[in-house]
Length: 485
Image 1: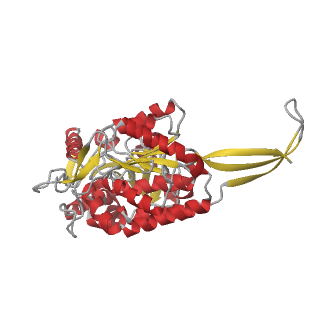
Image 2: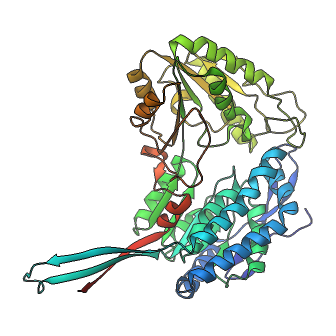
Image 3: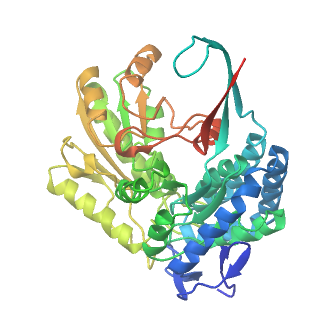
């Protein structure tokens, strides 16, 4: 509460031109701090500063960029003891998630892209024999394809993992020679604003990294529309992604959109049910279901449907909901009162449309905080809202299937295609089914994610891929250079 938070524009710290707004702890409903309310003019100044810094930064050596990214990771590691309680307080994450993921993974990502800055960017092609034409004389042509930075990247991040997601955008963007303007989610921007201290300590030139914040849509709209922005990297809802696409499309800006998910968990009769129940329970146990890759739709073969649902019902009852600082708490709050109310509305609609509520969905008896008890809705039908729409909370829906074709049809039967899961003892079947799923990632018998595999979605789950070296590709343009051999 005692710290003044400022935006970062071209190396300068500035108070919000429109004052501040409160950032609220989802567990206590107390104010964590005041975030700056930036003006459209400040957003434009940040984008202009990034554009002015781009020519010099894009010509810096890969070694220089790698060293700065490593120093940035060092500076964050030195601040970890301060960042962990801050990000925990503003996100409502359990202490375990904050300590093991919110901050450590941020540091790891910057170190990964310090190495990434040194990866080759040139792709030589074999000489090509060309005949003489009216255009030019014939002969051998030499060609090299090189990756070039896009320019100024607007990095717009979500509220579930504000630091980690930011690092996943900023790290590869900087490694490739782009400059950035970061716009964190309004619900929990404080740790990202504190990130500016690490940027300064690492020694980045002014304008290479800029940060703006705001409580409403105006800041993000202005950033996406700025003529100085060449690319928009956004993680969030499909509805907002559509709007970004509309605005950015007018100027042909490059897009990387990681949008909604409605992960299907196909569980066959021959699956290990203990493994399946444990994996699916991650919807409830991991950050209160606030993760787009969660296996929220359980599509279970009829031979094991009842046993699987009973196992999930039992598991839901074992998960302690409460104070995220308590070591035995598994399910903490969701981000806001509005999101809690939205989730409760989905649970009601699931029951109203014919589903059977077997666990949770009620508001726990706690004195304060935005809590929802882990909910399990069985006997669902494909057309129900709880089956079709992303809820982004601790809600699992279950529906049965008879054969493989029906399972695939059900899994593919939403507008999303981000992450799906297959549980079976037959790996040949798992691979066959995976290849039929219209999903950016398919995992079988696990909910683990590979940090090096390309990440993104089919259909309305997004545009483009990031993670690992694929993120370096996402933040670059291909340039072909041709000469007579």
